[in-house]
Image 1 (cartoon, rainbow, N blue to C red):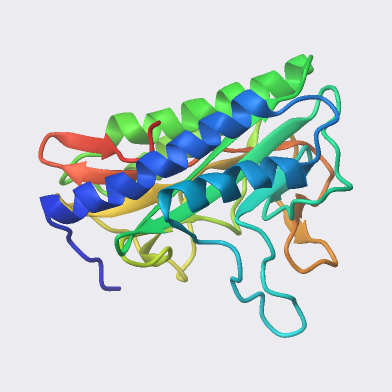
Image 2: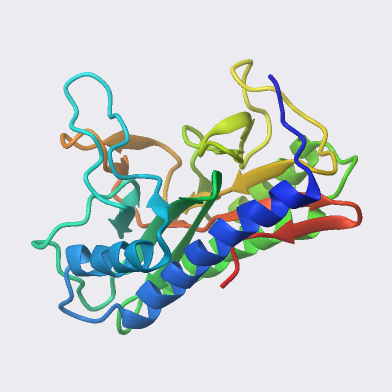
Length: 259
């Protein structure tokens, strides 16, 4: 595992991309309305990319054998969809939906990546609880990140917060390092006790990671739909997803994907 340490100049470059990501997510949240299609939401991000001369990180990503490359610049996942939902003119936003939007940008050679979940109209108390818990889990990471702390300590607190609130943490998908490429070392799990496929690491000044808790109201197991991309909860329960690109700095951390 080779974790790259970034200079202050490089962190500033990631922040330039991250601020575009934050702007897009804010615009999409404020524009989303009942009856709007997820394809229309995706067009908001397309327009910002055009206006800023930036490159979206998701469109064209290889899906592996037999799966078409990802066709949009955003992933828009609704209710039981956890991540990687494909925007469509046929998928209309309905009263009570919760909508998770994931978006990434590369500008000047450096990447920013973030996600948010929001409701459409009147959302059930269970779904609102899920969004509140997921946001809190991300906030716990932001509060704890600093040089010298082992990631496993933070991941354990994230999992504890989710499960004590009656929710589950998705295991099969995790956060990641980020910099000149979208995905880099290390893998950043949102739970403790992971297997030998991932290594613990100590946070150091200059590291940049994308922390992205994916929390469900039911069990933690997931499956992928026949489109090869859309990941849903195995038991059909709602899921929420929040993410920030975060730099480890001298006295703690800096969130790079704020609007």
